[in-house]
Image (cartoon, rainbow, N blue to C red; front, side):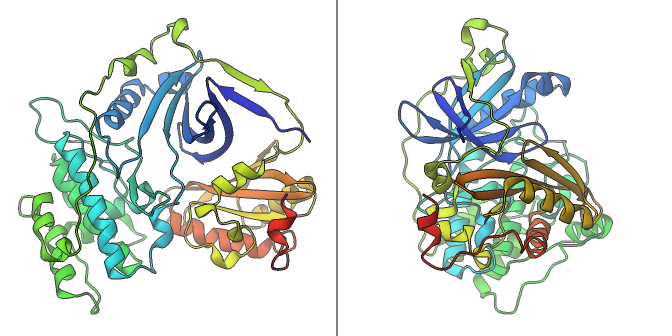
Length: 438
């Protein structure tokens, strides 16, 4: 079966590795340098329909401004007649969320130090993230943090001191943001960092209620408790950060001077670009045909797409294929996969039947399945997307990823789904798996 090949300019485009409300993120490879990249794809019609031009321009401008070793790097922005392509650094180490619940204190501190360095850099550039949470903190191949997703970030207008848009994920949002009276973006980001530190150390949230009004009450009162095994230093620092009064809440420089924070702290060294040119940001939105990048699509097939070994290995966490076969190695991940030796159509029909038995709506098109339902706390939509790929003759990989909803809820759903799909999941004997894939 032939592989469908698609190119955008100098980039060979692979499978979808993430999907949001208005954009898809695809794995791609620079055909000139052979470097892997992440390609964020937005349709022009969607941007115009939802009046998102200014928001997308802002996100691109911000990512150009905040170049830092602990922030996902923006390589370039391209445009075609119908789409905008944002080319980003491809981060291979997974999400920080994957590691939560099994980290020693020293490792939690290292991640927190890197997070504070990245946030401090953003604030020095006048940028406030406003949606800091473990799901937006990726890890590179060396295990260093990479802050991502600046879609809700703000650049305060000149002469305006307070921000007024209520945004972010409820469990990580500062109390002053919920009050809708204007807030300091720097102070609200610091609060979110404090919640992240607590989650890193404990594996659970300091403020966690299924009922939103009750959740907001606890956040407003900073009603939380630290486990008895917290050392005095970290307990003191968390209480200074999770101060419901933004005026008395500790600031970035105070955190950097804190004794617990400073232990084994080594500030990152890097060379910053002297000038950042934002002229190209506006150009990609202008209807100028000379600026369009070439798009090519070849070899449409009716069967599932074929994924080569390079793509499969690159997209596996830490270049480790064992998680494809050992369900016990899957922790809390946005994206998970399993392998089957059943025919592709049988895999699809089985997933559809199981999903319907779980009271989920099912949408299927060309071996791509979207499952939709209501989140456990009934606060929003829960959705999962499954793609079936052929990785070798008669061997199929089912790529499963969260499209909407809470990641911890997704993890529980994924375990339940795999239990119900046990008859199609392949469990090869040790030592056979890697040989059978090629």
